[in-house]
Amino acid sequence: MTAELQNISATTSERFAETIAGIINQGAVAVSLSLGHRTGLFDTMARMAPAGSLEIATAADLAERYVREWLAVMVTGGIVDYDPATSRYHLPEAHAACLTRGAALGNLAVYAQHVALMGEIQDRTVACFETGEGTEYGEYPCFHQIMAEDSGQTVAEALFDHILPLAPGIEARLAQGIEVLDAGCGRGLALIEMAKRYPESRFTGYDLCGDAIDWARAAVRRLGLDNVTFEARDLTGYAEPGRFDFVTSFDAIHDQKDPEGLIRGLKASLKPGGTYLVQDIGGSARLENNLNFPMASFLYAISLTHCTPVSIGQGGEGLGTMWGWETCEAILRGAGFVEVDRHVLPHDPMNVWFVARS
Image (cartoon, rainbow, N blue to C red):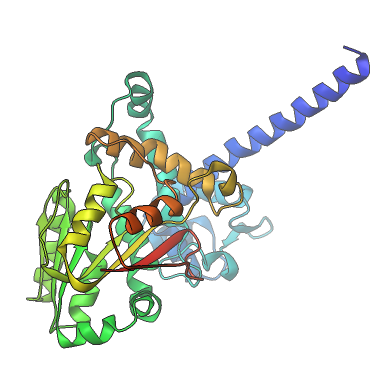
């Protein structure tokens, strides 16, 4: 190899090393974003004028020394502004718009929690590489808490303005009174919102995880709702022929043991003319189509550490988070739905929505 080629190779390697260093640095920022969300520091700072670390810690009821070190990560990461002349920190309004609870652009710090948790379960993931075995839902800490936060801002808050209108006529039917199932309901936030809005309808939520169902039941008791029930249930082989008028699944199909079998069971559980509304990750089944998909690497990493091993752990094939909208649509059509319409909502580019009619 000539000296010129060696220099080119060295330069390319050095640039790539800089890229890797940047990735590692941003990974540390991501973990710290999770801490800012969980401690409420972003919410606290969004309500404050520029302030010192002690003022911020006091307002958040946290230890100043740890808050100060966290602020250093946020400043060097470009998240928080810092004035060295006054030693004051400030979360710009434009940054708070995607980092606080109820944020105008959605709270992206919710997803940073996954980055922290992926590190926490790294030993378990390595074991999966070595053995090919899967995991159980309970081995991924805080899963339902994070998914409930995600669902709260992408589904529950958009349910009546954007999501239910995708299924023409369903709101009128809900107002009159119909039977509704949410399959893979998690903590049941979407179902609870519908139950509050449509007292004449009857709502049922099924989920494999008992802890999520316990949370949903407690919420129903607090709210005094008598038209919604939740049940811990393995949906493998599920079917209740002709029971429901309307079935929903929110980000719940791809990590099932048998997604195709479940969709066929849900189709059988609909009354004639019933509607199935399903949300899932909107990436393609083809890797090359996802190079510019929003947060694609993050979604593949979630698939690697949670969705794929959870499916395998149930005896499934492990389709993964990025199983592809094409796969979902093909399964819906193969299940015998007479109409299948696909939608992407402007507020939620990471997900795809299908409205299927029996």
